[in-house]
Length: 170
Image (cartoon, rainbow, N blue to C red; front, side, top):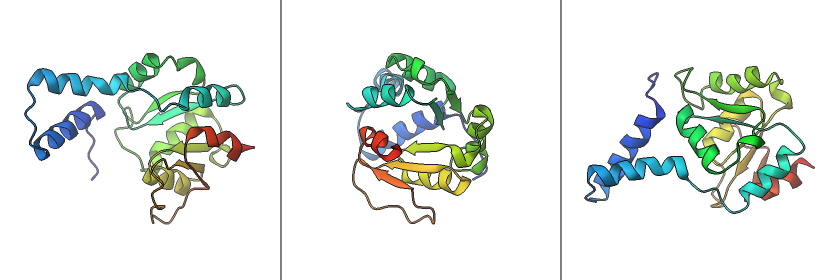
């Protein structure tokens, strides 16, 4: 829509919508606790081992619509900071969300690697499509075995979880 609102606000507004739509009664304390859970999300079981293995052979980075403070807290909570030598990149400074092409440009510029040589992994089909349209090689983590979204840019590979990524890269 050409508007930007920081991801902390978007997350809180989404929670408010979910609470209202499900007709749940939640006081301010419960709401705040739920919003703060975003900073403590646990990874899927295979993720720590897969990330460690991938980081041993290549630089990894995070490129997220998330607010930098949220991302930093999440990475630290899961003790994964050392694995992301490429950095933790957020759209916040650019004030635009994925899948706008300028977001993927952030990664290309920050890492100094041409887009054709980068791999992009996402659990969101629309994000993988946006990255593919930008020129990245894309891997869609499709845990729910959903059909590929019809956005004109199918992923290069569809994997069920992150442990399959090493096989795809071999």
